[in-house]
Image (cartoon, rainbow, N blue to C red):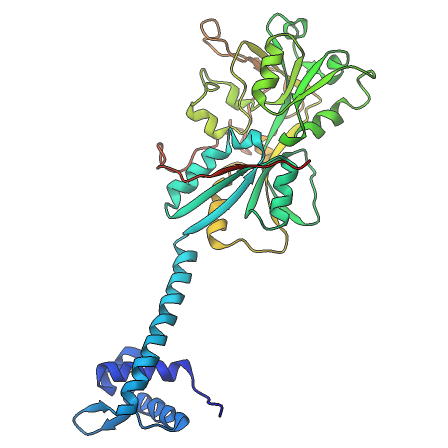
Amino acid sequence: MSMNVSLQQLKVFVAVARARSFTRAAREFGLTQSAVSRCVRELEEEIELKLFDRTTRQVELTLAGSGFERRIGRLLDEIEMALNEGRDAHQAHSGVVLVASNPVLSSTWVPAALARCAAAFPSLTLQLQDLPQAAVLQAVEQGEADFGVIAESVPFASGNLDVQPLSATPLCALLPAHHPLALQGALRWDDLAREPLVTLNRDAGCRGAVMRALDGLRPEGRPLQEFAHVAGVARMAQLGMGIGVLPVCVDGARGGHAHRAGDVALATCHWPAPAGPLVTRLLHPVVNVTTMLVRRRHRSLRPCAQAAWSQFMPDGTVADGAVAEDSDAEASSPDSETLPQTAIDGSPMRGSNGTPMRVALRGADTPPPLQVTRTHARIE
């Protein structure tokens, strides 16, 4: 036998049973007493059970009504608990968020974004997957990560992913101070045509931009070595084993000790200048590498993942972060004689109003302890 019983009828019945009053139950639901009486009467007719003994002075459960209230009351309490837990998981931004990032960004800028998330949403558990860039894209496409952080030259398109550009960083040459090319002003890509070069491999995401910029300029057989980490590229350049070619945050290389490990300035720069006795020269024509967030197309992020995504968004735009091609000025640290600094040419990044752009670190200056799990994988 099928029954047409509504959740509202059951809730009204339980309220009357627990309050032993139609009047108090009506007040709880914002209904009239007659509406509550009608609701209970329709329920009794539908299930063919008398649930209450009514008098002018009191309301008492029948034997059948008492057993019915115990079972239905527990079910309604469990439903309410399940709904509250689901609502809390979404509205309070609790739960686990999986973020995939290429190795270079996950060792520089990404931890600062994770710290912002931890400060803004203490109930979130953030897991960082440290993967080669191809594996980052695959993890996002297959739903193994909520979203990913990559570095690419624009335009970058994928049929399965939506892309949110964050900040553009120009490719620069890194040279020892005594290198002949370090003594001249602005450098062009064809100045590197016959030089041994060192850059990052495809796991870091910027190799394609380097190869496109050098296309047709280098004779066959000229060495171009590739490393997995910025430190390897910088060390080779310091030892004169090749000119390093890396994205370098122009604004982050200025201002005294901004490049030192652990400095707060690193938190606002996606590609900080490597520490050490190197000179950095902006390469012309300017080629920018853009840090991007990627997510599955046509799939909404879970609210907790959307909250984390929002903390990765900068105050500026890609246009603000990119370096204009006519940047020819040179700047160096004021204390470069006492500590090896990185000199860099190129005008500072500017916002739409013409003032130098700074991306402020949101959240507390000293973030709370962050729950981060790093995993490693490689796609052959």
